[in-house]
Picture: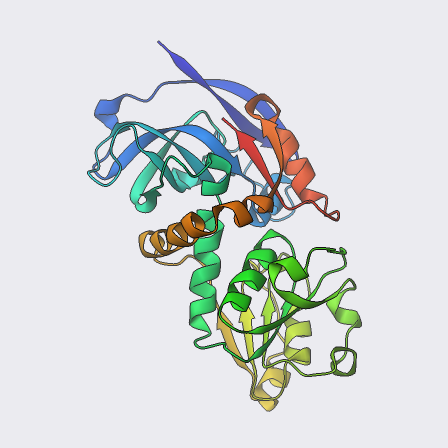
Length: 314
């Protein structure tokens, strides 16, 4: 029987190459498609699972954890994902680190062939940012501070600026191109070291995009103006504790945002990527071949200036 390659996470920071039998098209569920990987991109939420800091389910299923993937449909039981089309979407069970993955038409959309696969992969994280920003309502003329300026922070700053917000960012990693992505000011220090006097204003909105065991939400509550809004986008650690009393007495509105209605927001994000293909391509700063896919996680976990998204080429 024909096989295809996959990477299997067998322990913290440890992948092994495995060979899997090709899926039988007869076993495909309605509304699903088998997709040949063209590009996959590591996400910040994958890292705690890769390094075992917030997950211990080793060995993982082959292909886990990767949920930002682009590929060509080879078998389909969905009218929305025809054979031969390029699609971007979320592989079933986050098992995208394999040459073949399964996708549902509820969490995937077709993308034009003239959008390179690495850029098309940006549709998925951009859809989560778009959903979060829309939850803030009209941001035109409002001041926004982003805590965390990784790849998702870059997309958030860019989209907020497009919508007329005044954006500042804070992250210990320097970012010489912060202004290119819409940030009028960038503080390359930890948010915990900031005060309202450092900012020269108390922002109307603070967006937390760090998560995973950080105290960034508490920083956001402290830095936002009274009666301001804190948007939480970073995935929290289990049993995270918030300074709710401080938020309560300062009349802070807390909004959390994760997992939008996928098809709706993937479609909206696709439209933005089609318009801004050349600009958004700069978010992919490194690529690795499929055989070296584990290197993508090592690179992404090391926050250094100039390194944003790392793509695995199928």
